[in-house]
Length: 313
Ligand code: RIB
Ligand code: CA
Image 1 (cartoon, rainbow, N blue to C red):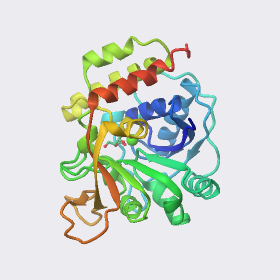
Image 2 (cartoon, rainbow, N blue to C red):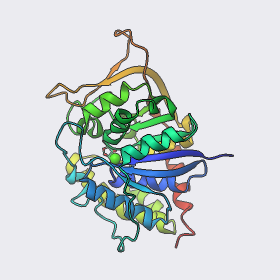
Image 3 (tube, rainbow, N blue to C red):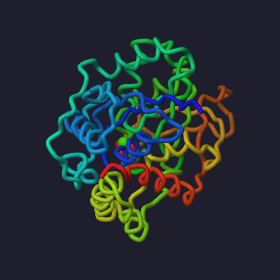
Image 4 (cartoon, rainbow, N blue to C red):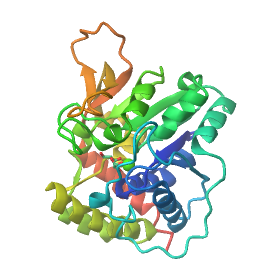
Protein backbone atom coordinates (compact mmCIF):
# COMPACT_ATOMS: atom_id res chain seq x y z
CA UNK A 1 0.00 0.00 0.00
CA UNK A 2 1.40 3.45 -0.92
CA UNK A 3 2.13 5.50 2.15
CA UNK A 4 0.50 8.89 2.50
CA UNK A 5 2.96 11.78 2.16
CA UNK A 6 2.87 14.04 5.21
CA UNK A 7 4.59 17.29 6.18
CA UNK A 8 4.52 18.09 9.90
CA UNK A 9 4.52 21.75 10.95
CA UNK A 10 5.50 21.85 14.61
CA UNK A 11 6.49 24.07 17.55
CA UNK A 12 8.35 21.26 19.29
CA UNK A 13 7.35 20.97 22.62
CA UNK A 14 6.62 17.69 24.30
CA UNK A 15 3.50 16.61 22.48
CA UNK A 16 4.88 17.73 19.11
CA UNK A 17 7.81 15.39 19.78
CA UNK A 18 5.40 12.48 20.23
CA UNK A 19 3.64 13.39 16.99
CA UNK A 20 7.01 13.33 15.18
CA UNK A 21 7.72 9.96 16.80
CA UNK A 22 4.39 8.51 15.65
CA UNK A 23 4.74 9.83 12.10
CA UNK A 24 8.44 9.00 11.79
CA UNK A 25 7.98 5.23 11.56
CA UNK A 26 4.31 5.04 10.68
CA UNK A 27 3.19 2.05 8.63
CA UNK A 28 0.80 4.22 6.63
CA UNK A 29 2.44 7.66 6.52
CA UNK A 30 5.68 8.83 4.89
CA UNK A 31 7.15 11.80 6.76
CA UNK A 32 8.33 14.00 3.89
CA UNK A 33 9.62 16.97 5.91
CA UNK A 34 9.21 18.85 9.15
CA UNK A 35 8.67 22.62 9.20
CA UNK A 36 9.11 24.51 12.44
CA UNK A 37 7.50 27.63 13.88
CA UNK A 38 7.92 29.57 17.07
CA UNK A 39 5.23 28.80 19.62
CA UNK A 40 5.84 26.77 22.75
CA UNK A 41 9.24 28.38 22.72
CA UNK A 42 11.29 30.68 20.47
CA UNK A 43 12.13 29.38 17.01
CA UNK A 44 15.77 28.76 17.91
CA UNK A 45 14.57 26.42 20.68
CA UNK A 46 11.72 24.72 18.79
CA UNK A 47 14.08 24.17 15.85
CA UNK A 48 16.80 22.71 18.07
CA UNK A 49 14.23 20.47 19.79
CA UNK A 50 12.93 19.23 16.44
CA UNK A 51 16.45 18.46 15.20
CA UNK A 52 17.27 16.70 18.47
CA UNK A 53 14.15 14.52 18.26
CA UNK A 54 14.77 13.60 14.61
CA UNK A 55 18.43 12.86 15.38
CA UNK A 56 17.65 10.78 18.48
CA UNK A 57 15.14 8.72 16.49
CA UNK A 58 17.40 8.49 13.41
CA UNK A 59 14.70 10.09 11.25
CA UNK A 60 16.27 11.16 7.98
CA UNK A 61 13.86 14.00 7.16
CA UNK A 62 14.63 17.60 6.16
CA UNK A 63 13.80 20.21 8.79
CA UNK A 64 12.96 23.79 7.74
CA UNK A 65 13.02 26.84 10.03
CA UNK A 66 9.99 29.09 9.76
CA UNK A 67 8.31 31.98 11.45
CA UNK A 68 10.00 33.55 14.47
CA UNK A 69 6.63 34.70 15.74
CA UNK A 70 3.00 35.39 14.91
CA UNK A 71 2.03 37.45 11.87
CA UNK A 72 1.04 40.55 13.81
CA UNK A 73 1.59 39.92 17.50
CA UNK A 74 4.51 39.32 19.86
CA UNK A 75 5.35 35.69 20.56
CA UNK A 76 3.99 34.34 23.84
CA UNK A 77 5.86 31.07 24.56
CA UNK A 78 4.61 28.50 27.09
CA UNK A 79 7.62 27.90 29.39
CA UNK A 80 5.51 26.80 32.35
CA UNK A 81 4.38 23.69 30.51
CA UNK A 82 7.27 23.00 28.15
CA UNK A 83 10.15 24.53 30.12
CA UNK A 84 12.85 27.02 29.19
CA UNK A 85 14.16 24.70 26.48
CA UNK A 86 10.69 23.97 25.17
CA UNK A 87 11.37 20.26 25.64
CA UNK A 88 12.59 19.94 29.23
CA UNK A 89 13.29 16.41 30.39
CA UNK A 90 15.18 14.46 27.72
CA UNK A 91 18.96 14.83 27.61
CA UNK A 92 20.19 14.87 24.01
CA UNK A 93 23.74 14.32 22.77
CA UNK A 94 25.34 17.05 20.64
CA UNK A 95 23.04 17.29 17.61
CA UNK A 96 24.74 16.66 14.28
CA UNK A 97 21.65 17.32 12.18
CA UNK A 98 21.36 20.74 10.53
CA UNK A 99 18.22 22.47 9.37
CA UNK A 100 17.78 23.46 5.73
CA UNK A 101 18.32 27.11 4.84
CA UNK A 102 15.03 27.64 2.98
CA UNK A 103 12.25 29.29 5.02
CA UNK A 104 9.49 26.86 5.98
CA UNK A 105 6.77 28.94 4.33
CA UNK A 106 8.70 29.11 1.06
CA UNK A 107 9.38 25.37 1.25
CA UNK A 108 5.71 24.57 1.91
CA UNK A 109 4.56 26.68 -1.05
CA UNK A 110 7.24 25.26 -3.37
CA UNK A 111 6.79 21.61 -2.31
CA UNK A 112 2.99 21.66 -2.54
CA UNK A 113 3.02 23.45 -5.91
CA UNK A 114 5.57 21.03 -7.34
CA UNK A 115 3.86 17.84 -6.11
CA UNK A 116 0.86 16.49 -8.03
CA UNK A 117 -2.34 18.05 -6.67
CA UNK A 118 -3.89 16.16 -3.77
CA UNK A 119 -0.76 14.24 -2.79
CA UNK A 120 0.59 16.26 0.16
CA UNK A 121 -1.06 16.23 3.59
CA UNK A 122 0.04 18.91 6.05
CA UNK A 123 -0.33 18.45 9.82
CA UNK A 124 -0.07 21.64 11.87
CA UNK A 125 0.55 21.18 15.59
CA UNK A 126 1.62 24.70 16.52
CA UNK A 127 0.50 28.26 15.83
CA UNK A 128 -0.53 28.50 12.17
CA UNK A 129 2.04 31.18 11.30
CA UNK A 130 3.99 29.09 8.74
CA UNK A 131 0.82 27.76 7.10
CA UNK A 132 -0.72 31.23 6.81
CA UNK A 133 2.51 32.67 5.39
CA UNK A 134 2.71 29.87 2.81
CA UNK A 135 -0.90 30.59 1.83
CA UNK A 136 -0.11 34.30 1.49
CA UNK A 137 2.86 33.43 -0.72
CA UNK A 138 0.90 30.96 -2.84
CA UNK A 139 -2.90 30.89 -2.23
CA UNK A 140 -3.42 28.03 -4.67
CA UNK A 141 -1.75 25.56 -2.31
CA UNK A 142 -5.04 25.57 -0.35
CA UNK A 143 -6.75 23.44 -2.97
CA UNK A 144 -3.63 21.44 -3.84
CA UNK A 145 -3.12 20.02 -0.33
CA UNK A 146 -4.85 16.65 0.08
CA UNK A 147 -5.77 17.67 3.64
CA UNK A 148 -4.68 20.13 6.31
CA UNK A 149 -4.98 18.58 9.78
CA UNK A 150 -4.83 21.12 12.57
CA UNK A 151 -4.40 20.61 16.29
CA UNK A 152 -5.92 23.78 17.61
CA UNK A 153 -8.94 25.61 18.83
CA UNK A 154 -11.41 24.85 21.56
CA UNK A 155 -15.11 24.60 20.87
CA UNK A 156 -15.67 24.74 24.62
CA UNK A 157 -13.30 26.30 27.13
CA UNK A 158 -9.66 27.00 26.35
CA UNK A 159 -6.34 26.23 28.01
CA UNK A 160 -4.46 29.51 27.69
CA UNK A 161 -7.53 31.68 28.36
CA UNK A 162 -11.10 30.68 29.22
CA UNK A 163 -11.98 31.24 25.55
CA UNK A 164 -8.96 30.06 23.58
CA UNK A 165 -6.62 27.13 23.00
CA UNK A 166 -2.90 28.03 22.84
CA UNK A 167 -2.16 27.52 19.12
CA UNK A 168 -5.17 29.63 18.08
CA UNK A 169 -4.47 32.23 20.77
CA UNK A 170 -0.79 32.55 19.82
CA UNK A 171 -1.52 33.61 16.22
CA UNK A 172 -5.24 34.25 15.71
CA UNK A 173 -4.71 36.19 12.50
CA UNK A 174 -2.89 33.22 11.00
CA UNK A 175 -5.71 30.92 12.05
CA UNK A 176 -8.29 33.28 10.53
CA UNK A 177 -6.39 33.23 7.21
CA UNK A 178 -6.03 29.44 7.22
CA UNK A 179 -9.68 28.71 8.01
CA UNK A 180 -10.76 31.08 5.21
CA UNK A 181 -8.31 29.63 2.65
CA UNK A 182 -10.53 26.94 1.15
CA UNK A 183 -8.14 24.17 2.22
CA UNK A 184 -9.61 20.78 3.15
CA UNK A 185 -9.32 21.26 6.90
CA UNK A 186 -9.70 18.68 9.65
CA UNK A 187 -9.67 20.38 13.04
CA UNK A 188 -8.68 18.32 16.10
CA UNK A 189 -9.68 20.69 18.91
CA UNK A 190 -8.76 20.75 22.58
CA UNK A 191 -12.20 19.33 23.44
CA UNK A 192 -11.06 16.05 21.88
CA UNK A 193 -7.34 16.04 22.71
CA UNK A 194 -7.83 16.77 26.40
CA UNK A 195 -9.74 13.47 26.68
CA UNK A 196 -6.53 11.54 25.84
CA UNK A 197 -4.59 11.81 29.08
CA UNK A 198 -1.45 10.00 30.21
CA UNK A 199 -1.81 8.30 33.58
CA UNK A 200 1.13 7.27 35.76
CA UNK A 201 0.23 3.63 35.19
CA UNK A 202 0.19 3.99 31.42
CA UNK A 203 3.49 5.90 31.43
CA UNK A 204 5.03 3.13 33.53
CA UNK A 205 3.70 0.54 31.08
CA UNK A 206 5.01 2.37 27.99
CA UNK A 207 8.37 3.07 29.64
CA UNK A 208 9.04 -0.67 29.68
CA UNK A 209 9.15 -0.86 25.87
CA UNK A 210 12.79 -1.22 24.78
CA UNK A 211 14.36 1.25 22.35
CA UNK A 212 14.92 4.93 21.71
CA UNK A 213 11.28 5.74 21.07
CA UNK A 214 10.03 4.70 24.49
CA UNK A 215 13.14 6.16 26.11
CA UNK A 216 12.47 9.59 24.58
CA UNK A 217 8.74 9.30 25.25
CA UNK A 218 9.34 8.48 28.92
CA UNK A 219 11.89 11.24 29.53
CA UNK A 220 9.73 13.89 27.88
CA UNK A 221 6.37 12.76 29.25
CA UNK A 222 7.65 12.51 32.80
CA UNK A 223 8.58 16.18 32.69
CA UNK A 224 5.46 17.22 30.72
CA UNK A 225 3.16 15.34 33.12
CA UNK A 226 4.71 17.01 36.15
CA UNK A 227 4.34 20.47 34.60
CA UNK A 228 0.71 19.85 33.58
CA UNK A 229 -0.14 18.63 37.07
CA UNK A 230 1.63 21.56 38.73
CA UNK A 231 0.46 24.43 36.54
CA UNK A 232 -2.91 23.42 35.09
CA UNK A 233 -3.98 20.70 37.49
CA UNK A 234 -4.50 18.26 34.64
CA UNK A 235 -2.85 15.09 33.39
CA UNK A 236 -0.67 15.36 30.28
CA UNK A 237 -2.89 15.43 27.20
CA UNK A 238 -1.81 13.97 23.88
CA UNK A 239 -2.83 17.03 21.86
CA UNK A 240 -0.56 16.84 18.80
CA UNK A 241 -0.33 13.03 18.47
CA UNK A 242 -4.13 12.95 17.99
CA UNK A 243 -3.51 14.44 14.53
CA UNK A 244 -1.39 11.44 13.56
CA UNK A 245 -4.02 9.10 14.98
CA UNK A 246 -6.60 10.80 12.73
CA UNK A 247 -4.50 10.10 9.66
CA UNK A 248 -3.70 6.52 10.66
CA UNK A 249 -7.13 5.51 12.03
CA UNK A 250 -9.88 8.07 11.29
CA UNK A 251 -12.49 5.64 12.63
CA UNK A 252 -11.22 6.41 16.12
CA UNK A 253 -13.03 9.73 15.77
CA UNK A 254 -16.48 11.12 15.27
CA UNK A 255 -16.63 14.39 13.33
CA UNK A 256 -19.01 16.99 11.92
CA UNK A 257 -18.61 19.55 9.13
CA UNK A 258 -19.25 23.14 10.23
CA UNK A 259 -18.26 26.69 9.42
CA UNK A 260 -15.54 27.84 11.80
CA UNK A 261 -13.48 30.98 12.25
CA UNK A 262 -11.29 32.57 14.92
CA UNK A 263 -11.77 35.75 16.93
CA UNK A 264 -8.97 38.28 16.33
CA UNK A 265 -10.47 41.44 17.86
CA UNK A 266 -11.47 40.32 21.35
CA UNK A 267 -9.51 40.88 24.51
CA UNK A 268 -11.17 38.20 26.64
CA UNK A 269 -11.92 36.22 23.45
CA UNK A 270 -8.70 36.59 21.43
CA UNK A 271 -8.08 33.34 19.55
CA UNK A 272 -11.48 31.86 20.41
CA UNK A 273 -12.66 29.26 17.89
CA UNK A 274 -16.15 30.22 16.78
CA UNK A 275 -18.14 27.28 15.34
CA UNK A 276 -21.47 27.98 13.60
CA UNK A 277 -23.29 24.97 15.06
CA UNK A 278 -26.72 25.89 13.68
CA UNK A 279 -25.72 27.40 10.30
CA UNK A 280 -27.06 30.79 11.30
CA UNK A 281 -24.33 32.55 9.27
CA UNK A 282 -25.51 30.73 6.12
CA UNK A 283 -21.88 29.99 5.22
CA UNK A 284 -20.73 26.67 3.77
CA UNK A 285 -18.86 24.47 6.24
CA UNK A 286 -15.10 25.03 5.91
CA UNK A 287 -13.81 22.36 8.28
CA UNK A 288 -14.40 18.84 9.48
CA UNK A 289 -14.27 19.14 13.27
CA UNK A 290 -13.47 16.17 15.50
CA UNK A 291 -16.02 15.62 18.26
CA UNK A 292 -14.78 12.47 20.05
CA UNK A 293 -11.90 9.99 20.01
CA UNK A 294 -11.64 6.38 21.22
CA UNK A 295 -8.81 7.05 23.68
CA UNK A 296 -8.05 3.38 24.37
CA UNK A 297 -7.49 2.72 20.65
CA UNK A 298 -5.31 5.85 20.50
CA UNK A 299 -3.03 4.32 23.14
CA UNK A 300 -2.88 1.09 21.15
CA UNK A 301 -1.65 3.12 18.16
CA UNK A 302 0.93 4.96 20.24
CA UNK A 303 2.24 1.76 21.81
CA UNK A 304 2.65 0.21 18.37
CA UNK A 305 4.54 3.31 17.25
CA UNK A 306 6.97 3.09 20.18
CA UNK A 307 7.52 -0.59 19.51
CA UNK A 308 8.64 0.24 15.95
CA UNK A 309 11.69 1.97 17.45
CA UNK A 310 12.77 -1.14 19.37
CA UNK A 311 15.47 -1.98 16.85
CA UNK A 312 16.90 1.48 17.48
CA UNK A 313 18.92 0.59 20.54
O1 RIB B 1 -2.95 23.75 23.21
C1 RIB B 1 -2.12 22.66 22.92
C2 RIB B 1 -1.20 22.97 21.79
O2 RIB B 1 -0.37 24.10 22.10
C3 RIB B 1 -0.21 21.83 21.49
O3 RIB B 1 0.08 21.84 20.13
C4 RIB B 1 1.00 22.21 22.29
O4 RIB B 1 2.20 21.65 21.74
C5 RIB B 1 1.01 23.70 22.12
O5 RIB B 1 1.60 23.99 20.86
CA1 CA C 1 2.43 21.97 19.46
